[in-house]
Length: 146
Image 1 (cartoon, rainbow, N blue to C red):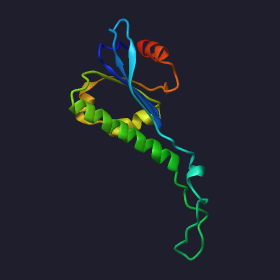
Image 2 (image 1 turned 60 degrees about the vertical axis):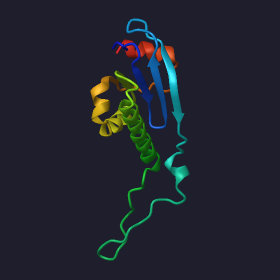
Image 3 (image 1 turned 180 degrees about the vertical axis):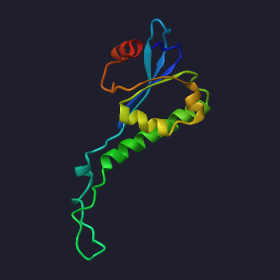
Image 4 (image 1 turned 135 degrees about the horizontal axis):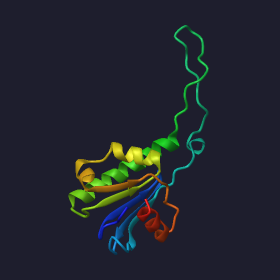
């Protein structure tokens, strides 16, 4: 996939994002970090003080247990929604004309739920991979080879 000049590339997962801009051209991209954000998101066990509870049965007994809340996943989903909102605000500011999003499948799915039309209209590509921990030059190559 080519990365047009001045395209914005969002590389994200559920707790880290990078806004990159192609300062090069489509043939020789040069991604430059414009903005980086990382959110502390401890495991669900570290975010709760007690185990999942039990619920009363309508017949007076006790059910086996209540499905535990996955606070870690809730925060990852919220982070993706916030990233989509940031993309929308930047689109309204005409900050980019072309957008490529790189995220693991679950995060990509959550982002898609929150795409505004202004973002969708500028979207030129998506790549369902987790590249947040990769060096920029490797991200460039992986996108080009996709």
